[in-house]
Length: 80
Image (cartoon, rainbow, N blue to C red):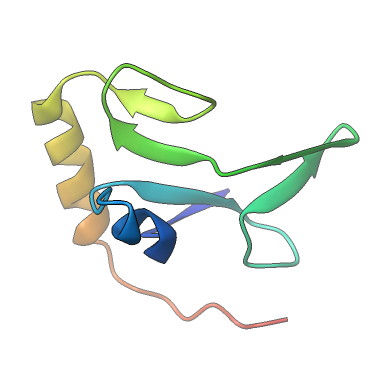
């Protein structure tokens, strides 16, 4: 399961509508290992250009997803 968390780094870049996709593993970070390959910086954002991100082509569709995510109850995530 991935957690959708707004990334401070994206806010600085002017991508405040972007969501970081972090793997549910032992750490809260921007990197993970998949079949021996280090992967990271996964994002969910509007648009059609992707460098490994999940993109939503239509702004109205992204707005619905964003609204749902922003209105989801927050949960505490224990630090390891």
